[in-house]
Image (cartoon, rainbow, N blue to C red):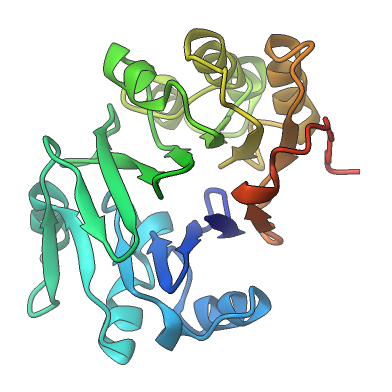
Length: 265
């Protein structure tokens, strides 16, 4: 199993997970043309995709979903609440039930209910039988269920959206600050670090920091908070950026323990 980010942040999100010939696109928050270009940079044509999984209906996650799905005849998986919020019309939508796993091709997927200001949002854990990859962003609070679902993963693509002091002093209006920092908003650097502290990390070899705010955070602040919790950890800490995303990461090659801080320098 391997994965990459086509871009992560408030201007658009899309993540690819691949196992054999199964290729899943989690969210598509870019225009159709930008998505095609980003896929090409990752060495893929949209025709090679198996399906699109949607976490929730916010535009930075769904902007390109409908056009991509229609043009390339791709099935789209989402919760019933997300489908209602989107008014998907004639789109071929497969419903995700939050109380059961689903299997697409060679991957088993656990949908994880998360607290976020959307209709029925979820995040995902992917399992190929040998390794588990957790994807977690757009979450305002770490719940016991989240801690349980992400314990024991081999790799974690984890939101560290904002630094509380930067958010408080930043340019957002008070209502938006309250939303981002609220229980249905996003994870702060400290909350992301808290999740890492609370989960079983015995299999964890790889953490990619994602969805970093360009206005309310800095990569080095996020990496600093997580590094503090991971002191002595023999794994890789990486950064998914808004424009460059994150290149392919192969989970089968993560047994070679080394720690790499790939900050924004």
